[in-house]
Image (cartoon, rainbow, N blue to C red; front, side, top):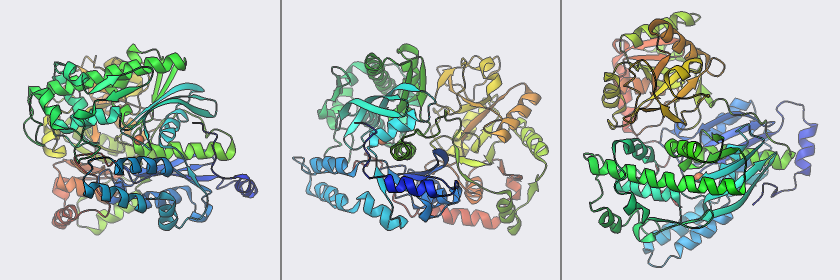
Length: 615
Ligand SMILES: [Fe+2]
């Protein structure tokens, strides 16, 4: 598999772009869709100018619908129309995927209903037709293999001139794991593991067994693991046989995902000696020990395969993407104990990020040059809400709010006063983050020194499990004084030990670790200013930072989303752009509208709870 496989003759396109005035240049839209977490991005002359997940607009968590609204946003962000789009890069190969669907559809013992739904879906979801019909686009569509999209999403945004590349997910096209390399503008692959053997499904099966939502609750398993002991690791090693070179095999008697709407069989429960946990039921030590055990086995396999990759590609640099690459604990172990000196993980390592990789590959195929090859320094690539819009929404209601337009210093001081008082702040400013993490533009913020904050936010705002830790945002210049970390960590993709002289119990996990975001003025000036003022007043350059949403819903996007989330939750104070609203300022009508809005389902198609959307 190589990047040098264009599916079109680009000579006409190149001459058309060369004749065009410099702006808007070469416009490539990357699309990932139909699986989970659909997204679009826009590359203009190789510069990533916009990227957003469809769920943020549709308000359907992990929306897999074709990303019409995200596509429209990318056009707006680039100041272009559909006529200016030179290429749409699609994130997977429908022919390969069709082969897998046919294989699955012909599986012996498959219930007729499931067989029918596989064949029905094969006809409905041919992406080229859908792109032309939904987007009204008639230009070239560049098809990019799914794991090549993952690999490119890490390598081209890593800043490395060469790297070994490891991609690991549930499944994409046929592969579930790939081993490759990047050098200059080229990305290549030398080995892959194919479906149904999948490290992603291995971890997801235990996620489902532990009563969490598959393809959503995996990070909860990772968060639960430090509370347990790996006493079931030997049993769990029966699920996966690590074979030679890059290969491994799942023991399919424990996995049901090929023929049923479940990830695991009853044999898994027999192996572990207890029935699966019912969702939302009580968590006990057994569940924590199983979580620790699966985490340990995943780390063992990842570490061994990272060593194998280095034996074939002896670079100092490792790039990773794919949903499993969001397991920051396993990544950290690969870096600490493995042979690589540097690691770059694509911040949107799941399928949303494949839109970036597909667009980058299309750019290389068309121009024979790399996209602008700088290390990704931020993910503030989504829509911004203007102060004017926010003002209009607030003024046309009877909300009582404070107006800090033109007085940012005052705004910052006011918010810091409230944080010191122990208030929980909904904070919406600037361009929304791309990927799964809130990084100071759509965040809930609180004082990390207050031990009660963790329980309060868990219970009243997030309505989520009490065991899950919150993450800290820290001024980059002072991160080393409080955390055992000596380099920037702008995307919350690393864990490290808390070494602070301050008691930071609200953001410290039970094993003494924290998943740190380092913040600078260059990438997020207003958030950095808030941290600086909090530091000046308290001597603590750190804030608790969690995503601005309630459980089961996407992170807020618009000012209206932020207001709705604020009204429905127990957040004390809302900051939207230059305006501040407290709970006493909420007009009665908003309360009613918020309830109505959240009772109404979104217009997209939600993903299943029990099994990956394999089709
Ligand atoms: Fe994937």
